[in-house]
Length: 412
Image (cartoon, rainbow, N blue to C red; front, top):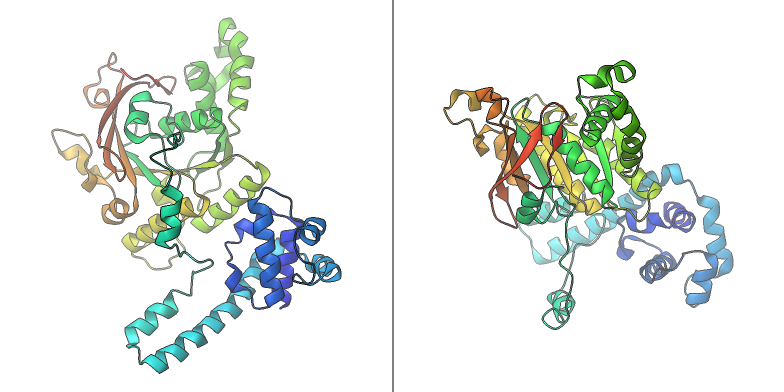
């Protein structure tokens, strides 16, 4: 019961935890705690603050334990240990549910595989995923009669690609892959800043390059400065470029891009940092970028790389769904591309391609023919959409300046 009090007290102090906990009313043991949590959720759903006054004035005080009981919950607050208290509470819930499963299984003589399946479902289940057909149908009842704006994803900043994907969609995992020097990092930064300018919160996990290196790339592409000149801005930028520098700084500052550049980060660590950013920038929906897939540190201690990548892609997809935001991850391609006459990438060129193909909602390959022909006048960048779970596949063609890292949004 103490864990439940600590959870509810923390929610009173920081209302965002009501949603972030992922808890369901049924996972509380104490009936009063169930009523308090249900009341909190209702207040939050109506756009109201959740505190002692709103709880007591909006609901029957006797149903939720009374003023003294609610006030006493705040003495159990330990925000930094909130997840531990939730886990302790869920351990009690799982044990209770396990006993229920075993009791029903004994009465109805369930086969062993069904018992194991039901018990396995308790391991990660924080909240109910149940929806009835009646509830779902009610949500769409008015659709033919009431005009609704088509929900757009986070813009790619590239018109032809947006036309195919409608932007990067919430809850979806996108893989952006290519051989070295195809412009993957510049493409990622292009998307990140355009998402930021559209009031999204770009969060970049750079497992290879430092935040300062990425910043230099952003400045070069936004201000159209040659990256060669960025090595010594004082002596190599001309007067006209220096005059534009404050404007470039100001424009980039509007993106609110967040960088995390420590190597060997796990998906669990990324999830924790994303949650912190969401709370710090309330009202802004994140777009998560990871550079790149095979540098993500696996919590799987086995030496099987395929199993590690498989678990990581599943975790990334789960993170996209948990935060209801796009997750865009860069990936390398195998050297098999170089052995073919047509070097445009194929799905089979993805390293550990099986799990990536299965878990990704969208797969985009980057291809620059000029890299192989050495044609300095060819600025063409092909964005090959090879998988698009909820839309068409095809190729969007745009232009890329390899000297500044600029990706043109209007295409060619």
